[in-house]
Image (cartoon, rainbow, N blue to C red; front, side, top):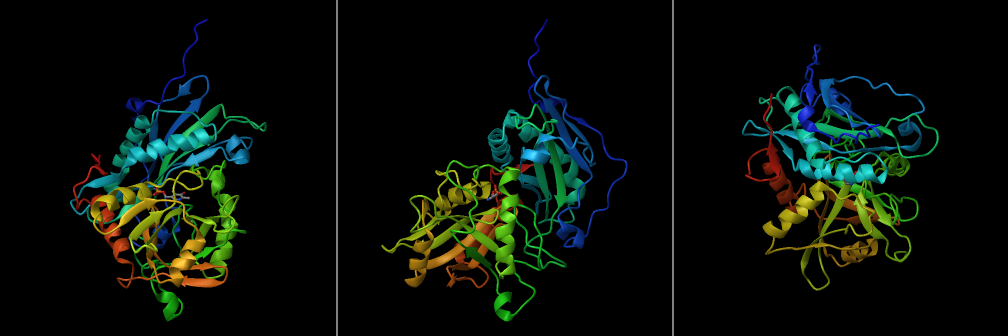
Amino acid sequence: MAVSTPAPLDSSKLETQFTQTERPLPDHNSPEQWSQSYQTDHMLTVSWDVTNGWETPKIGPYSNLSLPPTASIFHYATTCFEGMKVYRGYDGKARLFRPHLNAARMLRSAQRVCLPSFDPAELEVLLIKFAEVEAKKWVPESRPGTFFYLRPMMLGTQSTIGLQPAKEALLCIISVVFPNIDDTPVTKGPIDGSGETSKAFSPLKATTGTKEENSPGLKLFASASSHVRAWPGGSGAAKIGANYGPTLVPQQEARNAGFDQVLWLYGGSGFENNPLVTEAGGSNFFMVWKTPEGKTQLITATLELGIILPGITRQSILELSKDEFKDELEVVESDFGIEDIVLAHKENRLVEAFVAGTAYFVTPVKQITYQGNDLRVPLSEGTSGKYTKAIREYLMAVQYGQRESKWGVVLNEL
Ligand SMILES: *Cc1c(COP(=O)(O)O)cnc(C)c1O
């Protein structure tokens, strides 16, 4: 009997069937955009099983999935995902931002929950092809400077109540319309990696509340004891569903107390006296401060302990800052603790802080609250710090085609 090898993921086999029932494109900054659940017309699916490997990738009309209630995903969170955007440039071209990095991270996340392996270069092609089907309509040339959100995901679909690696899985790429978080929301919602919406919010242009609450910038709540996202040996570095549901309780607590996001600390073994500052909500955290020696430093947590998500925005900011600000800033990935921020605040050494990720983009932080103390972070340019602003502008210029860069992958739209 011939033993067949399971087929690899193969983007060259992609089949496309266009929808017969197109959905209307919502207005810019409309409630549909803010709902973050209004899908574009199509989805891409590829099924896998342990014997046959990857099936033919297919783009077809967006539709519901049909799965048995015993499917592994529903019980054991055998799922991982990615978050990316398709940007419409001011030059009329549509782009993805460094998609090969998302494809590579998707593979690492899949492996963390024993989902099947694939060549990330094949996933990258599928991401590009899917974006090429949707771009013309969903980021029309008449709306330069806008984007929609791509959500690649993989699920264990095998029927199994026994806990075991899935023998069947599904890779999907879906996309939803997304508001520009710099715009004033017409209805609701902060944006973060998990797509949660709860209260009127715009990080750069707040719309409700008192004058003080109206000032731009995020307020972060930090607690080392009740708010722990990840720990050494855990799964914090993977973009897997299991990491996100449990963050909702601390996030709701912080929101109910008037904060925008949780600043995740790690105060475990060795860090009890000065809990590590890791990341904020679904974004990486950056601080600009003066060191006690008087150097100006851009600092973010290292990836070494595996407790933060290695953001592509984070990596890009580190790379561009080493170049753009080489005469002004020392750029470091290093462990630093909340007590270091407390001390820097006391000694007037805080320069600025921001969070960074695809969903939240680069958003200034104006306050960190720790053990009942509100630490104010300066916003030197009014709505953000100087470096925060320069970094935002640099990345936007790449994404919207105003700066020539290998990071922007131009789509050949259908
Ligand atoms: C996705 C994500 C980020 C940001 O990653 P990007 O690749 O920059 O979008 C940061 N932290 C967490 C927890 C995330 O899920």
